[in-house]
Image (cartoon, rainbow, N blue to C red; front, side, top):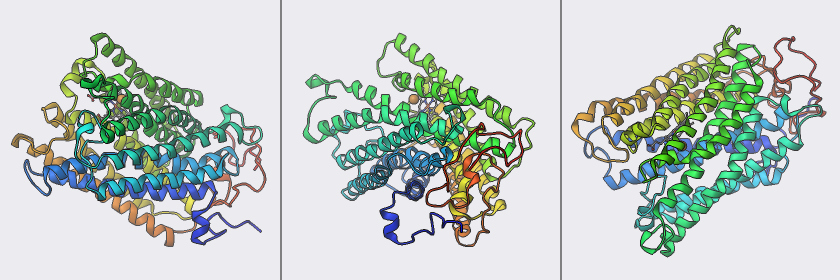
Length: 533
Ligand code: HEM
Ligand SMILES: [Cu+2]
């Protein structure tokens, strides 16, 4: 008799709340981060609606400041950072390694509750009146604002531990729980990016914790770490904050790159053009990512020499990213390409990531950045990467692994329709923002001059199309949960280990520990190759 699936084995609420199954924890994170996306998305739509006209449209200037602060805090820390590692990383890394669970299952469960505790602190802050500093919490404003900053700082501080423990767990899992015979160079590429991202999570997040703590002391107890009048240094905050937050943008993009590296070989039915190039460039990005934080501070008074060094180092990230892009495109080239929903999202990813990355190189050029910094140009740059690339890859991951996680198929025509709407809506929302920024529209401003109206209206209309695409995806996925056709074990003809076990998998994934003697992607052999499961 085949064992029951992880969904059917026990069905009580308690069996979920107290589970140590990495798959159920992954599903819980998927639900929690999706709720965060929904809330952050509603804020985004309201912000865009406010900018439909140059003056008051739906909210006061104060409410606008609060809305963009919460939008940023929720999207960065509650959605983007955990969205792939804590949900899909938790669910799939052990399976891709041939393991039964992560190394520390109870610590894994704790990360869920730490996340929820952080979210509760934020909710308390909002109930007390919210804050208006922006997600970057820059002093001196953050030391002096009368808004309710403390609960927000504490919420993000708590959440950081969830990120650190997820990273720790995945690192130990990758080192100790690989299947018999699986050497490092036989790990699937998604696992490599999870390894890189986990290292960043463990090394960088404590620096965020520290700077949040110092800001809490400055704001709450009137200490003076960042106050020059008392011997403090206001720019020191920016160094600490970006020492974390630049690597953090790679916490958001590396997992997306891992998804791309899985989806492309499966739907091109072809081995990655160079497994080593994709695996090693991950570490190039992770390492150089720690040396570039100063590019956020070109106008903070740093020397021309320092700015030049940070600018050039930043461009190395683009080299490693380009290695990946060429390898992915080379994998697709002459493959037998099956254009299904996940691959449509990946096509959008490739276009938008290259676009966003190129504008990254542009803003890393000091002389240009002096003109663009703190304008909508920067807003457009990072949304091209964080939404155009990371969110798009997250959507690809949902569709790619949906049959495995839920045991159901979704509607392919609806999937493709939603993907096209998401792409068009995204482009219409954010492309005009490059033009706005270049024309001189500053970020985080409530009022704007009449001459910017057309571009702002285009951007707002785009946000409705993007929102519509996401709502359609939500609807047909929810429908598929109950009425979708049953998924076979391997609907796409994938080669990695998750496709060798039933959909959905059983509680311990594998009946016997698999032995792996093949490289992870071996399209030169017929499907039932030499992997013994
Ligand atoms: C080719 C690689 C990249 C380069 C050279 C680059 C460069 C830059 C530079 C110079 C800035 C500062 C602009 C300014 O404030 O005036 C910036 C801002 C930003 N970038 Fe990138 N970037 C790259 C990729 C990425 C990626 C992959 C992400 C996210 C996943 C990202 C997210 C951000 C964010 C969030 C900000 C602005 C944060 C803020 O001020 O609120 N960038 N980037
Ligand atoms: Cu940066």
